[in-house]
Length: 170
Image 1 (cartoon, rainbow, N blue to C red):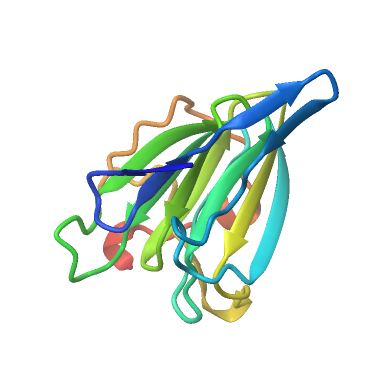
Image 2: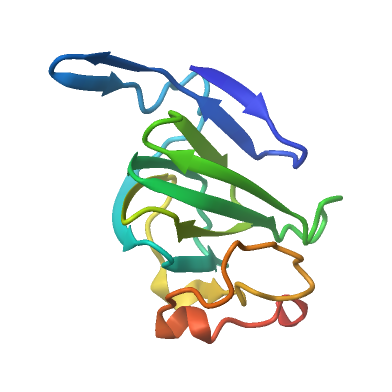
């Protein structure tokens, strides 16, 4: 595994390696020396193509997250919402797939979302804290102030994601 820094402090990509043979493959998921956080809560989501989930965060019980794709391909996005950060309001995008063996580490203080790019997308989240439904916030996925160029105009959205707040209201 190799840690690759991004242009936003705290965000990094993990380039892993898969070992293939006639039975399938083996892929390392975490190494403590790379992810120095305790990931105590795991989530798996399944999304169809064109499903957009996000942009989500928790104000209380904030979470570090490590995202990887078990099947399919996604466009993963993290938005810096740390008000004291030099990159406040900036975002970072990456393609994660079962084939490219990349994972994405997102520290506390970021909103997160992704777009499913294949017919079936299974995403694993390792989190440093439990879900705290009462403090969940959803930012508008298409907020012009965030300048995220999604490759879709009309994604499939949940009711919660259709009603995200503007970044300026956050």
